[in-house]
Image (tube, rainbow, N blue to C red; front, side, top):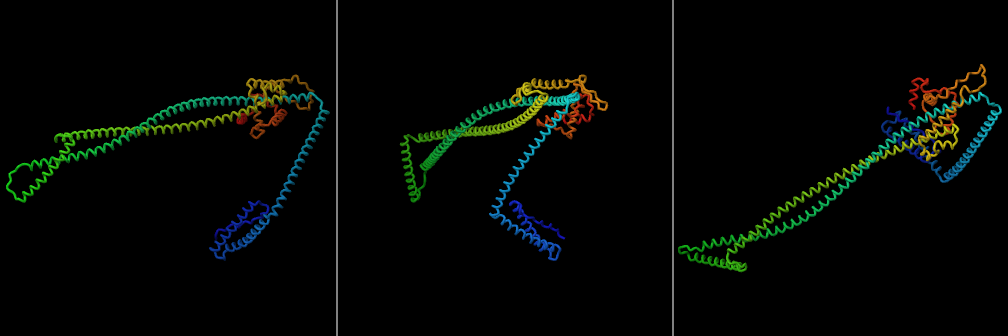
Length: 555
């Protein structure tokens, strides 16, 4: 059997929902309808109509028809509800309801204020009645004085405990401040070292910049000179090539003329020699005569040309012509040697220019690497500076927190002075002022004097009445004996006080920060009966060792 699909959920009414939720619900309904229609078509195509699944699908199809009808009705109802008439009516109803709610809230506030006033009046009436009853019935007696003394002893014990705790916290704050001051001094020294290193880097960077500018100027000058030399070399090479081609052509022409003249002279010497010959054929003789006349004419023409050249060159003989040719050859050879030397000098200058280019490229690469190194070092230095600044901000926040804690402790000392009966002028004289600006003028000696005053006042309260001087009526035998008085020299045990705080608050020390709560807790602790057994030293404490270890966890 195929996996049975879950039955589609029935959608509830959508009258009291927002338009966004209504649109989301309609979208989910359309998705659900499309999913079930697709599943029905798929199962109907795979399974025959007689299966159980087909029957279930027919049942679900019937429910789908109802769901579609309900969706159409909801769409119609939504369009009706979104009509402008209904919207205006709903807006008017909403305005009326909000106005009524505001009036109801104002009435409730007035009722609550009236109830509070009535309760305050009733409490004042009860307090006045109780005071009247106490005044009319209470008669001062030694028993009341004894109770007051016990109450004073408990107050003294509580104040001693508070004083001990405040001294401990003050010492801890001084220690923390000393550590923070040492850290700040170390950070200031590090900042000075960093500034010196930074100035050194700046000076070194300036020197390197000057050196780089000098190298760039030298490289630019060398490059410009190399360009000028290259242009001059190119022009000299072009001129030399033109002169060389012209001289080579002239030398080739003269060499051709000399060789032709030499062959002509050899031919003439050979042909001018007289040789005995036999009588020849007349035709052959005529041919030879014609050839002789042609050669004679050519020789005459050549002689005429040579004589014209000699007259034009103002030369006397062929030796002068040969000497002129030799001089020209020597001149051309000297020019050729000069051209070779110029080529060698050009090659040396080109090599020097190439070396200067390579040196310039190397200097540029070194300067680029040095600049990248300096930038990397500058980034690292900036990151270190940012970390130091963040650490400084954190230290400043810690100092502010310690100052706030110290301010709270100083306020606690002022409250202790107020509890001991000092007026505002005396507190200002002892604490060097009560504002935050005046607290900056507070010195260690002034704070020590204030704490000594608290201690002296507490000891006076403890020693105000001794057990020998305490008068009191004779107690009856059925009355319980009074608890023995604690000597005034004893102090409240810190372990017992911490244990009491831990046990009362489920192993969590709860220290109130509001002034009213602190004063109220002090008064409750002073009047509490369990404060009596705390008046002993730490060496006389009867707590087990495990309890002391537990208490030390919270200190």
